[in-house]
Length: 72
Image 1 (cartoon, helix red, strand yellow):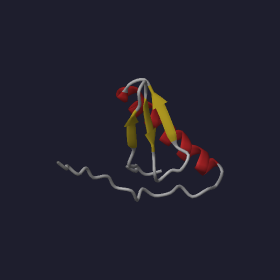
Image 2 (cartoon, one colour):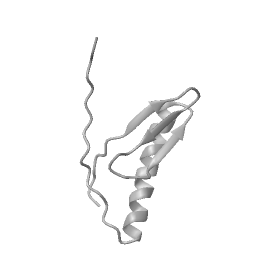
Image 3 (cartoon, helix red, strand yellow):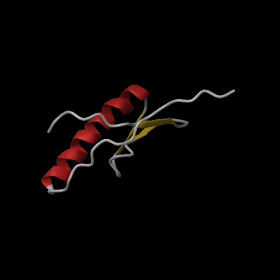
């Protein structure tokens, strides 16, 4: 498979960080630190794609983009 770049949403909770991938429904990770959740979500994406391919399911192409907006 060619290299793809997926948008990842990271949320800080009271005791952990969570990450989801909007273009890959069901793909998520939880970690104690931001660094840990970033590592875990990369692994989760790779595994999620491998399962889809093994099942003969088309892997969704990345479509989501991320922007940040500053407000007062």
